[in-house]
Image (cartoon, rainbow, N blue to C red; front, side):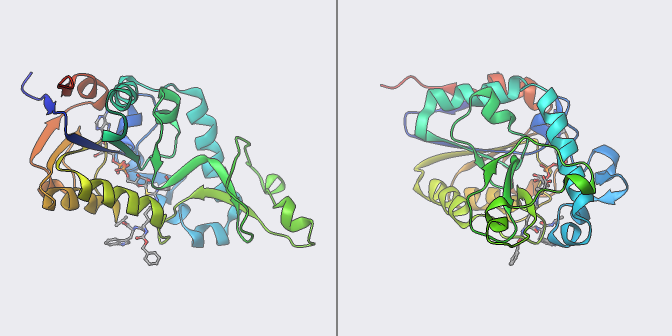
Length: 252
Ligand code: BV8
């Protein structure tokens, strides 16, 4: 198959996924579906600190509906293929996802760098307590969650989704780990799968990989905004392409 990527004994593989990788599991993508709207709100307005400050009930409903939906779907062959690749390559592979749905973890991928946060994590808007696992749904104003640790100090602090919203910085340690993986690779393959390359700074990663001498490959259904960064575009569904994409050379 011409589209196979040879993974030699010294090859390191960085895979970046976006909403398109979860589409075959039944989770709508951001921009393709309903032109990036949710209940007639622009995603950028709902997934933002300003949106949360203005209407925390509406934002918690947005994330609660996604929590409920993601719990009803299953990982698809694309997720499963990436989990197998990680088992085969160990620390020679890094999986970075912009998705927050947890499907990579449910397919067995570990570790997963959730560069835009995670749907099933919640944190306090004020205190420094660690983000915690939370599968609860907060659909109405009466459901709004508040921090128990702040309450113990007579403070009222709303809890928020542990998501990187538009206008918020990405986790510096995550970004550092990704850029270090790229710069340490003697022989790098960078694969972006199911992402429109529309959101920064993640959309710039392909250029960092290309400029470091890496091979850059796009697995995507449609044209993307950062197309100039890719040396190869394998057009199609990630669930059909990823399972046979990598040809791993047995260790000598
Ligand atoms: C920051 C969490 C700085 C929310 C998300 C102008 C220029 C440059 C930057 C900016 C700018 N204006 C504003 C910015 C900054 C902004 C940004 O990039 N905006 C965009 C809209 C221009 N970025 C930020 O705000 C970031 N922070 O810059 O901080 C800063 C500096 C100082 C001080 C403070 C801050 C934070 C960005 C993170 C936002 N959060 N997610 C949530 O999920 O609820 S982004 C959100 O969109 C998702 O995480 C998602 O990952 C991301 C991108 O979407 P995709 O995953 O690519 O999905 P999409 O639907 O777009 O595409 C799917 C693709 O799959 C399609 O191409 C389709 O063809 C394909 N497909 C579909 N099915 C399949 C398939 N492919 C294969 N198989 C299939 N079956």
